Length: 517
Image (tube, rainbow, N blue to C red; front, side, top):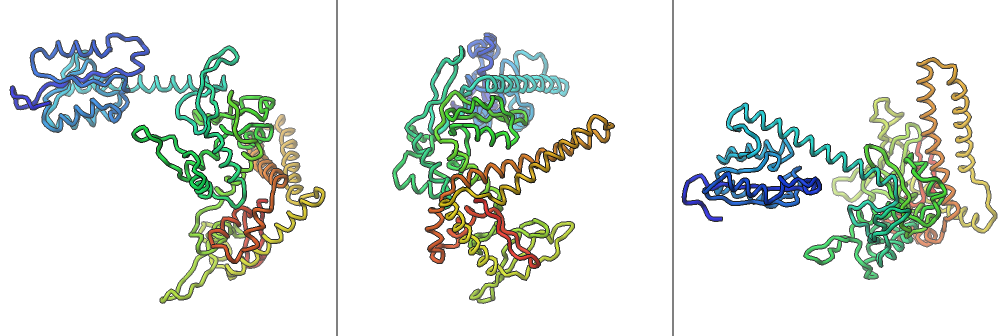
């Protein structure tokens, strides 16, 4: 567009927009051609330029290329005024609209609407315009809420794929199931790489980076579906792999997977019989509620492998990043026996940095109540030696247990005992509800809810231990343990995290190792 020669203020811009929802409503008065025709008729013989965004939402301007170009032309002094059919064509976001009009005011550009009969150069006119835009924004939010409700309803009623992002390892096909037609996920050639990722990661010593290196070494199809200029973009980062390893979409969900979701407190929409060890699972989150629906698609990964991966990832998430693991391979695993807070391995170097002193610092001492001491006299080297011996003893126990008949597990029995005690307390509280007044009734209900949460946590731990006891393979642990002195600190740290839940340390009570296997 060249600068106008008829005046110094620029030419008239005509902006027309129609969203997808406008098309669905069949509103012909808001068609692109109708808007353009009315605006051109209004401006008459003056010089104008039409900017058109067809099929674009009014919630923001970043996704409207014609609007962005019009704003740039306004900044360049090419436009004197903007004409629209209605103010909501300009924007349905009140805050954004006011920001834009403030910017246009600085450029000396005015905005005119053909449908709203008031002059925005007056304060009364601006007030009416703002009220109309408030209603337009309310309408947009209402439409968005209706769409979300419709999505939630469809997701609850069927196991169809609801659209949106394309899941790696699947493509979608239209199928009719139980008299309804929708999209069903179908495995692609990428499914094998999904299975490989799960098989690799379930091993205690395997990290996310190991999986990425494996893919690169074996020239396996990239984990990314992103494309740049039509070509696949390699994006094999750890966060992408981690999301794949957490997704229930890939599991061939059976009864144990059902129990896993129940222990998480999710709303389960299907009966346990639907968990047939074949079909995958959709997890939907809406209005603060997480619900689980069996899909019509077949899963890719067997239930035991998927659950083993979830156990490992859950354990890794519990390990806080409270320091660099190059200080000690026990970083993130230590807790105080007295207060339960994490113990950090701190250090001090001499001025020449030729010698380093390491010590244990209790974070519980910084809390309001405070712990018994801030610095422990127990040395980090003592803890490392004790934990290493405990790890070797644990692997020996697991190896022996594999060759002998199943023997009772002390931790398993302890958890079962705690669950029985909680069930008994809940039963006694339920008996008291009938005779309770309002205050006591509320107290009992709150206590029962607390007990149910404790019970769910214990049951999750019990299920995890049972699965690991059944599936544990000590061979991946035996090899690195046999060459322990040759391992790097990071490799030792990864191995310890694969085996240990927590290490309790106390100057008074010594060192206690709680294993996760």
